[in-house]
Structure formats: C-alpha cells, structure tokens
Length: 78
Image 1 (cartoon, helix red, strand yellow):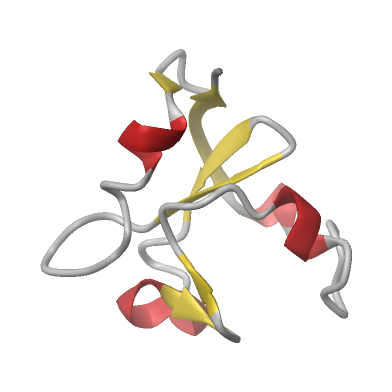
Image 2 (image 1 turned 180 degrees about the vertical axis):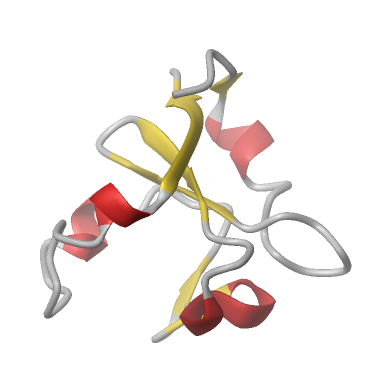
C-alpha cells in the first residue's frame, strides 16, 4: 500500500467527476475505484467516491470480499 495519507477533506476531491480519480476509504484504507467499471463516473448503487464507506460496505451483498482485488493508494487519517 502507498504511504500517502488522506484527510476526509482531501479524500472528497477524489470523487470520480470531471477527470478526478475515484477513491473510497474503507476501514482506514483508501482504495482506487477509478478503473472499476461499476464505479464509472464515481458512483455505485447510490454511493459516491470521495467518501468513507466503511459503514456502507457491511450492507453490500459482497461485503468486504472485493477489497483484495482493489488497489490501495493510502490511508485515511483524522
């Protein structure tokens, strides 16, 4: 995993809109969703990139099983 640290405010810039990369945080790890087809345009099932989705993923059908397939780009800090 990359050593980059993101605050929640910095993470919000990575919303997948207007050419921005699409990043989401889950359990303190920031993942790059930019090239994940279901996240095209920075949105997936009502969720928006640039946010901490730790509380959302536990309700997803796939739960955390998809995380191992994603690229971690950093960590979320307070």
